[in-house]
Image (tube, rainbow over all chains, first blue to last red; front, side, top):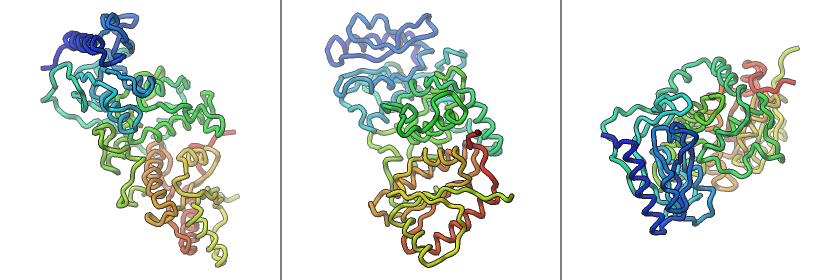
Length: 288
Length: 138
């Protein structure tokens, strides 16, 4: 039986209050109230009084791992992590963006999160479909077991079966919608480059205005940069104002990386990201 | 007028480029459709080079590097192998014909192989026809 959202919120508040009072952390990354109950916003609690403003409900989908890299190295932080968020933290530790001892993970097992834009329940179609965090220091609810495990890559079958011209037409239609607001980049916990390749002028990789060719360059390169690093939280697609199904491409690249290199992103802090690693016996078949 | 493919060849300085040189000095005949760009190592190749080449009108991209284990920098091509494999998958899923991008390991002594690969690849691109999917329309 999963712990109720109300109970998790209560546990989260208690834990955050304790950590701030003891001075173990200088800030707690969690969720706060937005303009109404259904639209919570990212929230940073720095003093004990802030804790009262925290919320946790089924619409708290934002990946708070995105905010870890914003603070100077060595800042002691606590963060509320859902399953995908915990993978993002693991991946950031692998990439040495944060230190394991600097961050306290408040793990939240979740089931039945909802997209605040559409009200739909979020499942393995758009995310990694996990129920329990892979890494945590404190668990704020009971672990969820006994759910049917669906492969997060099942949703790809339809698109892999498409003819390549049809698939190109599909992606062209989707990418042409892009208004280049960079919400996907802002929402992504793994997109921390400063400057982003698309903001560079020398070399200028792609057009910055929302033109089809610049959009294609931006998205394809971004998929490449996230290869073997995307932890499949699906936040890019939920942040997208024009509903481009970015999660599909990320899932496809993640699937191929897992098949080729035998390692999924953000599962263990001992791993190395697949593209900054190699094995002498990697097969040449992967290039065919 | 018949279609003449425009191919970008990216060759590593130590093996494939020297191999191409050998093909030239031994006067091997191969099609002149490939424009070769020299880079110091196959791992120097940013995947965006390949996307950009297609956008700027290349019909095919051929990447050449040292045989795995023979890299001048010991491990460069082992990183490149993983990276370019991902590039290939991305091109494929975006709807590009997978045959338009090819990676070959050609050593400095394999002038024959270089000529053979270029001949074969040019023929393959000729059969695929002009690349219009990524090309920026003027």
